[in-house]
Image (cartoon, rainbow, N blue to C red):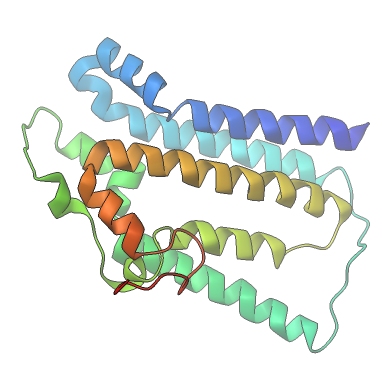
Amino acid sequence: MKYLILSLLWIVYCAMHSFLISIRFTNTITRLLKNYYAFYRLFYVLFSLVLLVLLINFTSQLDNEIIISYSSPWSIIRYILMYGSLLIFFWAFFFNYDSLSFFGIRQILNFGKVKKVNPSDEIKKNGLLGVIRHPMYLCLIIYLWSQTFKRIDIIVNVILTIYVIIGTFLEEKKLVLEFGDAYVKYQKEVPMLIPFTKNKNA
């Protein structure tokens, strides 16, 4: 029963996390808040973070029984995957993405300003983004599964992996709407989650 409750809590969290940033909901919030929508992203991040911490804390108290242990060479492989995924995740976050926009800080700094840009100029294709369109999501999946020890870990990791994959496809739709043909061209050139699976010259 506890595993069912845990699964439902994580599913509800993932659904809520996705809904609050969905196109339909954000369009509604934009109409309601108008220019003050610039503050919504920061609220979204803080609200999601608080709920995530509470959910992780609740999860950690349910089951301490270790069912998977790692011995050499698997322990070495696990550490390589764990630290490697963390390194690439933060590298992408700080050097390939706009971290200020992610937290909503740039939107607040630009509050009241009018800025027109060519969407195609905003698509970054250098560095990791020239190898894979969503390096942070791939790293998150790898990190999750390199931290699998307990039965609860498996349940949560399955739910989060499915959510990340579904969320990636939903984000792709948003990016196509935002950047148009420029992003469609990028999709054809660079793979979504599995590196080196597309030929740029094809």
